[in-house]
Image (cartoon, rainbow, N blue to C red; front, side, top):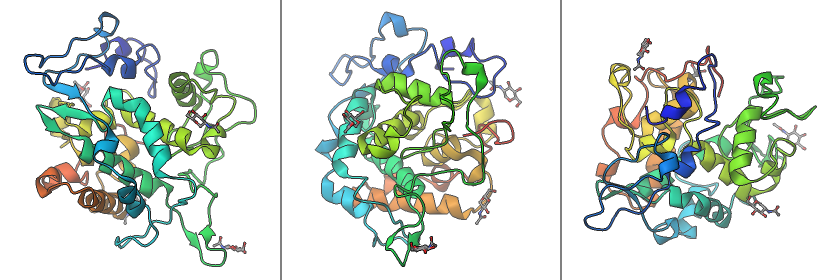
Length: 325
Ligand SMILES: *[C@@H]1O[C@H](CO)[C@@H](O)[C@H](O)[C@H]1NC(C)=O
Ligand SMILES: *[C@@H]1O[C@H](CO)[C@@H](O)[C@H](O)[C@H]1NC(C)=O
Ligand SMILES: *[C@@H]1O[C@H](CO)[C@@H](O)[C@H](O)[C@H]1NC(C)=O
Ligand SMILES: *[C@@H]1O[C@H](CO)[C@@H](O)[C@H](O)[C@H]1NC(C)=O
């Protein structure tokens, strides 16, 4: 396990945040692209949290290879995908994404090299494919507006839950009357996730989760935080699998879980889309990813074989009967 210090905390709980182990901070290491500096040194306080692998490094910026015209094509309402996305472009704009990602780029978001192979294009395409499919919504032909909430956030519809876990009432107390359902560009739920993300980003999300609905930069930041963190026990982060930093163990191999795009779906949605064979939701997310890779000029070999791209045959990391997103 990468996050050794966290395992101690997690015994009784199914869903646990990495409260004492700031994986993000620890993942940040010195750059290691220079010749003769292939193995990054880990800051002493991070040594027990996160061991960076050899030949991993962080360099450059997302703006070096990803421009506004590409972003706007991705989120336009008349893209060439069969399943159309209708995303509120007044809210989700390029600059918000770039501003939000600037915070995470030093931790490797869109800037990671593994064995001198650049993974940024793949990662940005993958992240935005998830965002597009989670923030798209049914278009109301009468008003020409999205028919769900104005931002079309991903939202669990048939639940009255406040997503308040009382076990965290001291660390992350719930504000009365506030529900910690999913807000932002990717699904995050529960008071402790709002608390953790808020701590990392220095925003009082426990008292003001609505900030995420009002501020696209923050909505992207929370989503990228979700992307960079493992969130649940016994699973890597979406970041780690898309950059191929994660190494599957024996159970993973038995469960057909490999590093790559398929596992990002497994991490984010589990059995809602994975392990179901040829599932339409899964195919929709994959279609967005392939289209985005193409728009970003990625070459065919980045896509990889179907076992890497899809999660149709993967055993899920966390079945939804035992945990929630
Ligand atoms: C579309 O908007 C109109 C006008 O506000 C409303 O009456 C109708 O119920 C909406 N349709 C859907 C499917 O939400
Ligand atoms: C939106 O969020 C960003 C990032 O957290 C913050 O820097 C900015 O001040 C916020 N904007 C407003 C208008 O609150
Ligand atoms: C592998 O899976 C089995 C059965 O689900 C479990 O008991 C065991 O702890 C797992 N081992 C690892 C290394 O995750
Ligand atoms: C995809 O899987 C989910 C979860 O089992 C299911 O609700 C949905 O109907 C499936 N869709 C298709 C097209 O198989």
